[in-house]
Length: 286
Length: 272
Image 1 (cartoon, each protein chain N blue to C red):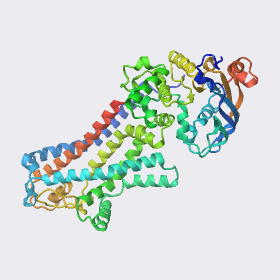
Image 2 (spheres, one colour):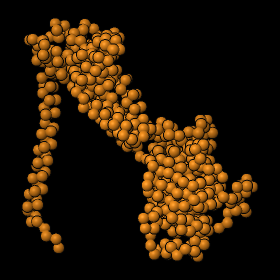
Image 3 (cartoon, rainbow over the protein chains, first blue to last red):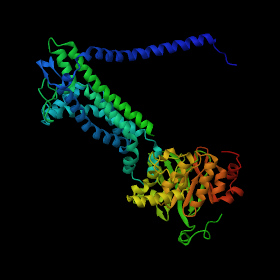
Image 4 (cartoon, one colour):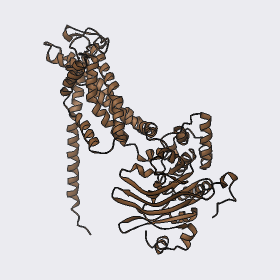
């Protein structure tokens, strides 16, 4: 017989553990809930059809935020356009083709650390490379490329993880009937990994949509009367608009400010939810 | 069991029971670990050869030698000769993709792709350039019939291969291999994940296939080796020495009158 501690004391430590874990979870969740509720309460009053469909006037005190909404969507599309293909291809190369040596490990480490580089540093990189060296000027193109450089780390990392998660049995089954390495990647590995890759990419661009610092120095404008006509023009974007009206426009209505924040939050969260749906559906399918 | 001539059609008599695969003084290393030692054996065509032995003795390594699946393992290195119809398969000029088309493989755990039954079987032919729908349909039906699965799945060809039972999945994997018309089929413990009924089905299937194909099967199951194989190889690991070929010969002889004491001990269940 092993010696057992008294039942009562074991139950007490069990309860204590539950309470502590529950409290920690609540502390983690509360700020998120608070932000969402507070933003909705304060910003809902500003939301109207004209707020969403008109250009701003009076330094943002009057009119709407349509150019900023459209600008943010253009940025997201541009980021996706550049980051997704390069990210997937690099992810495939690093997992399937690169030999496991010190150089590959160094590159993998660099990519992981890239995600931790402060966004303003990416902004300065974009300013000197895309805006100045490539002569794209302050533009939607330069800002998209800058955000794509930042999103790349996340797209590559999620691609690598999704590709590595494809069971080895599938690759072997394909190679064993005489498929080439590339055919195996193209027809067996990629279809399996795609939902994971897309989920990572959507999360990466939803994060890009909320960035202020990188676009601040690469092409975002404070006020524009209309929508950007080409990728070489400047643009408005929600996070930068929020920053300027909050910091630089005296006498700004609090409701309008929170209204901009609410729209930004909805845009970002809707992409996060989209990612969750893709992940959920792909899990059900198999 | 004699499969040589009488039961076979004329077309097959040409390849009847010559040596299909041969290894000569083969050593296999994974880095500094030696997995196979000085293996020399001739594997007859149109027969079933069983590789038996305790876990970790190098059975799978020996099997994977024949379609160069060991190549996928970093640090794997082969010494000696492995021949398929007299062709040295580790020659740098050999196209591994072409080799694997001739030497198909079925794995321990059924591994149908997460696609339809039809696409699972059509996978190989498609990769080798068959795109004509009618032609693919013909190949799929023929392969599924050969794998004794057609009657069970003919009405659900568009269903996911993963929806089939374990035994059906394994026969689907066999059909997938047959669809590229290989000459040799390697089977790595194909029944170890299956129930006894499904196991018997696969064994019957193997016996039928042996009329046209050279089959090599790795198995843990002594009864299975005795039931299905014509020749058998007993591999063993000695103290810190894996991959020793102890005895190789006709299955009946190996099981009833083994030459080596170690074979006898293993078969009668004294170790392993």
